[in-house]
Amino acid sequence: MSWIKENKFLAGLAGGTLAGTILLFVAGYLGLSNYNKTKEKFDAGLSEVSAAEGIALYPSEENRDGKNKALEDYKKAVESLQTTFDKFRPQEIKDVTPQAFADSLLAANAEVRQAFEAAGATLPEQFFLGFERYKTSLAPASTTGILNYQMDAVKKLMLALAAAKPAELKNIYRATLLEEEGQSFDPATTVTREFPMEISFLGTEESVRNFFTAISKTENGYFVVRSARFTNQKQQAPNLSEAKFETAAPAEDASSDSGGGDFLLPGEEAPAAGADPAAATTDSSQILSQVLGSEKIQVFVRLDLVQFLPVKKLP
Image 1 (cartoon, helix red, strand yellow):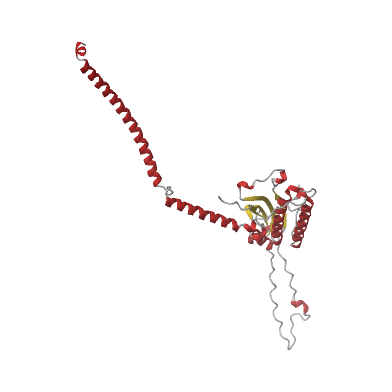
Image 2 (cartoon, rainbow, N blue to C red):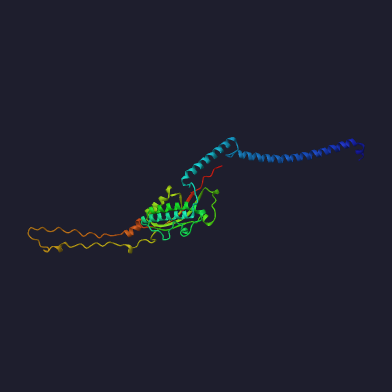
């Protein structure tokens, strides 16, 4: 202590130097810690940038131009596809009076009934194109436009079935529309609207092929078959009791017509030997119809009428 008192200047200088050294050490330590943290962030950012530079769409001018071109090409392809389906897009669906819709429905039903009668096919007694609920009541005025559009497509579908000449239409079912239940259809989130229906009929293989060919034609509307079931009219294989054969008529005895028996007079020639009786013909069509595929087929088909909505402008 006496030395400090005697050498105050040196003691102060030594104390100040020690304090400064401690402060420098603390500052250096804190600076190094901040440097390490900053370097870690820099290395992480550098790693992310390096990874980004390796992807296909790194934000460079070249990639930007390529992206814009790809988007433009995609936009043109979508617009071209929309144009392709313009023929299935109704120009306008306009509501009519309930009585006007009822008159159109009656006329369409009569036309279809006449077509089935001409084809020799039968219809269900209560047939009304799937619009049976409007057989005794009028449709709401706010639904007549969309119902009229659907009714016209169903009429064309039924006329196509009649032209295929089935044996019988068993049933037609039309799913109830949202508008008929007092609700509304929102077209904002979709480009098409589906109208489900089910048809069951009895016909030959040829009539089935003709019907499915007809519904694929553009003039009959755009229909999509969701599912179909085909079953034979008879579920069991043919048996022996179903075989019905024609019996041949008994051949007449040629010798019974001659009164001379087997005796020949002078100058007469012996009669030619009679031909062998024809073999009895068999009618196996009932069995062959099942074996060869001419038996009638029960058909159940679930399909949608697809309405293409107005074109949406792409961004």
